[in-house]
Length: 279
Ligand SMILES: Nc1ncnc2c1ncn2[C@@H]1O[C@H](COP(=O)(O)OP(=O)(O)OP(=O)(O)O)[C@@H](O)[C@H]1O
Ligand SMILES: O=P(O)(O)OC[C@H]1O[C@H](OP(=O)(O)OP(=O)(O)O)[C@H](O)[C@@H]1O
Ligand SMILES: [Mg+2]
Image (cartoon, rainbow, N blue to C red; front, side, top):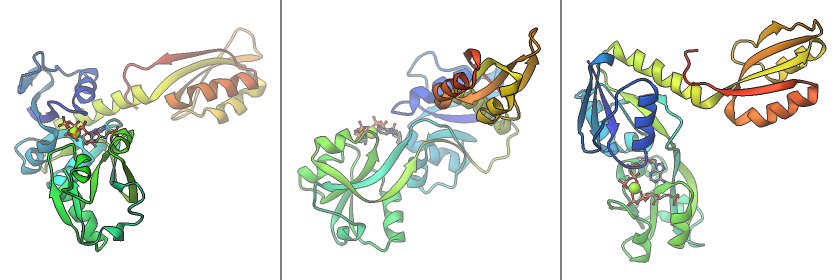
């Protein structure tokens, strides 16, 4: 049985559960369930705080887990990142009152509030800057206004929380974070299956299938424009001058590729979603 830790609440929780559902696993029915067994798939899910997941997985109590890269590094756990899951993206940055700081060195000797002391301490040590860390549970942006810190180090997504608190980012990016799959040192054959299934879901989210008809004369140009993963599938049409092409395209490029193919003379361009994949 593979023991998997997943976030019980917070920013990563819903998408992590949806991905696992799309990968064919049974989710929890009651949001208060702490443990859900899925014997048909040989796994057991443990719903935990994302901040604690690296600790459980690093200790070997659980085999794998989904958490944020920032939370993994903050914990100093020995769990290792085995895949990036393409959601929960954020940046970890220093911020201070507008106009007060311009470089990291400006923080020397001052107070920095954060909920990620492990991450910030390591970063500052690597950059030879010494500060007094003020560790808070959340809402760290208020620490400056309330006078308990001179600057903050926190998760930035849209930047609107910082702006509302009259703060602005400065200094280098501490970390680009994303949701990640982490694993312990435990050997478990189920990990490879879980990884393949999650990668199938990622491909289905990141790519679409595109079909179009084009003249043989323009086929090479069209394939150059949209080369697909291995190579496009080309089928004969009744009209010997024309062929039908099927190819996978990154979802984000879909409209540009359609415009360019149309410009080359492609017609009947159809886009279909992919439900799941093994590449
Ligand atoms: N806008 C965001 N705010 C907070 N965390 C975010 C955001 N976007 C992505 N994340 C990521 O989510 C993880 C934090 O999730 P966590 O559940 O611990 O905190 P949270 O979503 O702020 O919830 P809460 O503050 O209610 O505990 C981190 O990996 C962080 O990088
Ligand atoms: O850049 P933004 O899009 O504004 O998002 C970033 C903010 O969101 C999170 O706070 P959260 O709501 O989780 O509260 P918390 O600080 O109490 O965790 C994070 O800690 C930042 O404060
Ligand atoms: Mg939060």
